Length: 327
Ligand SMILES: NC(=O)c1ccc[n+]([C@@H]2O[C@H](COP(=O)([O-])OP(=O)(O)OC[C@H]3O[C@@H](n4cnc5c(N)ncnc54)[C@H](OP(=O)(O)O)[C@@H]3O)[C@@H](O)[C@H]2O)c1
Image (cartoon, rainbow, N blue to C red; front, side):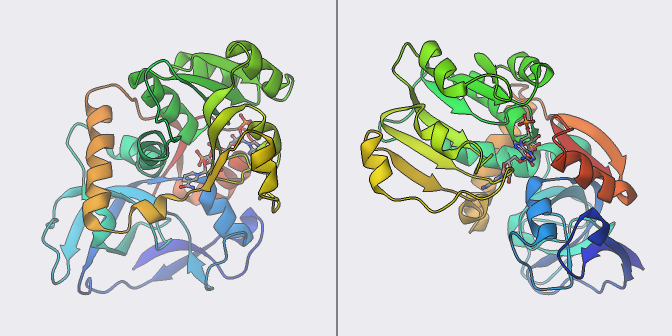
């Protein structure tokens, strides 16, 4: 028997229930993977609360690393015994072992531990597509300023390091002075405690009135409008999350009034639509992890049976880096 954590209805952390189940052999295009480490992500909260609805009941979890136990017909890039990691649909990573479509499962280089992979696969692939593929019309060149909210979180600490590696000046925001220091320690050029400081005014000072070329905003509701005020003309507002709640509908005219701005609402899963694009993105991530340009931001490591408490901690803004769950 294997086990997983699922929800039968949207709710608080108490909605997560452990279930025992039998698992068969992988079907065509699938692998069976035994998890060694599982990544906790804010999207797991959106799935649990119903902000991103799932057909119910449904197991949760989007990211894990472990050992391939069996491969189904047609799977050629993985073999039993391979170390592997993934960050993709369908949810179900909160489990000791699972069946998974092989398309988004990648072989994990020896240089990266299971915990590091669980801390950085989903979040690092996200930073990859944001910093490398979600760009303002003029692109990003070394020395350019960008603004990154919640920079001491799991995605954020990878972004600080990767931006520095690319020669970019990342202006971090975070919810405490300790978190700001952590972002600076990971390569942010400047850090703003946005619970106590006006981040629009600080960005203006830091950029000598010009504004940034791009804002990467995963906080959503609480920061959206003020983020637009941090952009220079033709700048890009890249929304990619809703930690404080979803952004309300806007009138496009607002983008004209604030300087012919561009707006996108991006998701990793569009970028992972094929085996080739998944592998190309993972290769870039594995390279910066293996050569030390980016250290996986392993924060708290806890047993999977504490997953409800791990959700509480994440929602309370009480974590830094990535939480890793061990089955
Ligand atoms: N679209 C995509 O492709 C994609 C992929 C991965 C992640 N994401 C998004 O990226 C964000 C970061 O993900 P993560 O898993 O690494 O989480 P995380 O950053 O470790 O945690 C979320 C952080 O958001 C900040 N926050 C601000 N207001 C908040 C509020 N009202 N409630 C809770 N948190 C609040 C907190 O940092 P402070 O205390 O410093 O404010 C908190 O630590 C999430 O919004 C997630 O949905 C999007």
